[in-house]
Image (cartoon, rainbow, N blue to C red; front, side):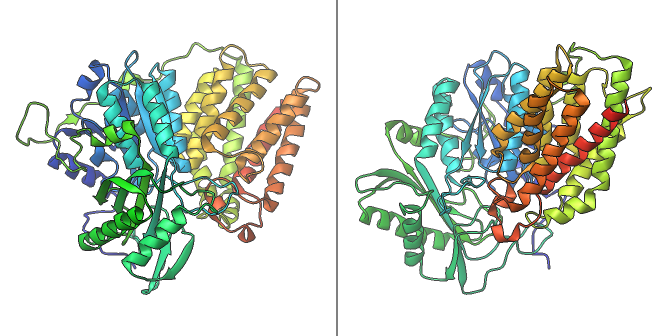
Length: 587
């Protein structure tokens, strides 16, 4: 049963929410063709030689992140669908709109979720390739995790808003990108957040995201409704705050924040969306009183709906250690409406119809890279490899979905098939290909753009990162050793941004096994023999994931007892690799 929501349509709810925001704050503009909100005076900031700031993520956390755009805070924010990371194309469009080659640069602030790291990371790499100066800080201050075992990492929560304020103040002061990044990285390590929920949230057009009995509450859940660390009976506000502070400062947990008598902190009491103002004030009182009773000086306190989880009834508490720099940054002026001051256009005192900042894809149209070309027969072989690989992924949709039901939402096969169909739609014929098959470097980049847009999600970002990095190794030569370097380079890039390593039960297990084997065999055997050995290694690695504990991606939050089959991502790698081998053998 779907929940009650005051919306017009599920599909347009994010777009209409952004439009409503800029109606109220006409100093903000929506970037044409994208779910991106930008300061209307951002070009003045760039011309003044100041660093610009970008953040974003899935919608449903309002006022985060577009509500924090303004002087002294963000320059732009990118919104994805509800609880879904935005696509790299929109992130890159945002970066192009707030900086330019030769400018002071942009800092991207990202919450530590796999999809956000991948999509924002991919856009950052693309921006760097265009000559833009870009850096990224990943915020993960969740204090809920109790185990020291590797997982996808500490989730990024309401503490991200502190990063907006700190970095924004430094940027307004004219500090360089490197200094802002360093201060933000240090501050992120001295911060912690814990949340508690009384009711689940419900997505537009859907029912509750999980179930809680009327007398229950859950400690340590994520802002998308991810499972917490424990459920208890509902208790008083005083007991709730005590439980939260005890857990987030417990030295026995791997994610606690160090807090001792004499420390000075800023405290953020955040409404997760459905808690009354009366309750929030009670929680704020309890949090400050209890911290000061522990000998901790709460020098700055903030209370309100800062980073929500739609309509979830609950609260989170964030603690940030203070020093002179952080204190100065928190006290600096900002016009960001979520603090909350409506932002008016520069030099104007009345609200006008919100403007739309023009954005034309023609300005950044793909150009030939000048990379090395291959003969017609090699191009035909690449065409056949792509065609057969995509057909095999489409045929394996149901099988991969079945494997994915153990560790995810059962759509891995559908996601990969969607990307494969997108590639086949533009592949064309051998005599008239829709992809630059004669220029392998350009081909890899073209495939990267197709999968990130048609496949979407973490899988699309991973494969796009893989292909983008692989293209760098195919610029000047395309011999067997170059293809191996391309594979290894792609593997290293997705490990860097995705956070997974061999043994973490992901597609990386198969890819790295294949890359390692090819690196060992390519100089001593024929390309066919080397690839045969690589495929065997990939298949062996994929099957081995059935006995692994997941330590990255969505599966890392699933109980190990439920994971008995091979990882679908690892298995899918073997399908397209076998298709490549089949074509190579036939040559």
